[in-house]
Length: 488
Image (cartoon, rainbow, N blue to C red; front, side, top):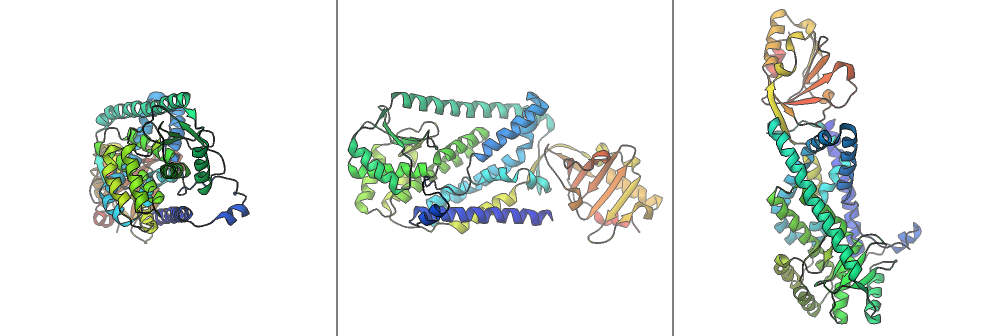
């Protein structure tokens, strides 16, 4: 049942995101949905083209969970517990991004840059699933002693606060500095082009266009009607140059790419200790820019492509905060220029995106961290067991009434020495789904145990309705033959 639920949820999310991505692709490539928009009363809204979800759901959701845990447990214990229950989530994201880092050169050759950019956002969807996907027992476990984990978590959390805090403050400081010194664009011809390009992309509400004396490259900030603004350097541009610049920046605003940049900054803070993750998320930012190059130049001729390449070369500058720049990453210029001059149309890549998302969701919870190694006898008083049930496959239960004293002693002796690992806080298990399974309990300790193929779930007899239990991973294959031999 658990496997079926996982497959159903992963397929549902994959199909839903595939639908929204393909619809966004159609909107950006000329499909007219204006009649539908009027039918549903959306014809007065800006055409914001997203792929079905906001990537900020992950940091916002984790922030809400963090606040609730701290309120309940206090600051010190709350921070420790929060980072412990986030380890499964972070393991999934880390492995997904590292795999995508190696796959992305191949993907860029065969699917659209828009699809490549969307693939970097998929781990944000893990929040929608919450921790339900950790109901499964992991297929692999990484052992990290509890004492070491207790030392590393404060370092990890402190680094996250410093890195993300610095990023957030840097963005706010930069935006304030720009908006205090920027002046509204007053050239009527420039404003006319800006208005035409905005209307062409379906913006119904005006977007501020300003000049900033210290800007070296055009860039945009914000994602709401009140905060969005596009900034131009204090240099003259030709009409063709302005149209190319405005299309590039307006596509960023239309896709709410500022949210994606903020999401990547959040992940960089979470993985501040992981150098390969910095490389992976740098590639993510690069694909966002490549996707805008792709859509701007889709119908461009060779002269426009050459002009666009000159713009990238002549307007290279640094990116500050959660902004989208025309040309900010000097290290990516060579690759971007190569793609600008190469006229080719790649398929959308919707099906491949669905496969990537399905794989990411299904993998969540397969890998876990354990913080303690022991035997079953060290966590449960096997001698005090007074009730036992056994079921193999689809057979009926066999109870301890069928056990002879010798068989009972042999069974408990085997169970007592079973090597197990305590899974890190937050692992959740549905005991009734562990098949084949052995159940035994002790009235003396008021505890019961569910033994599955590779897991042990320890429950409190007085709180069996509580979904969260202590879960242990069995370090070796359970000898079901030996257990079944005890039951005649």
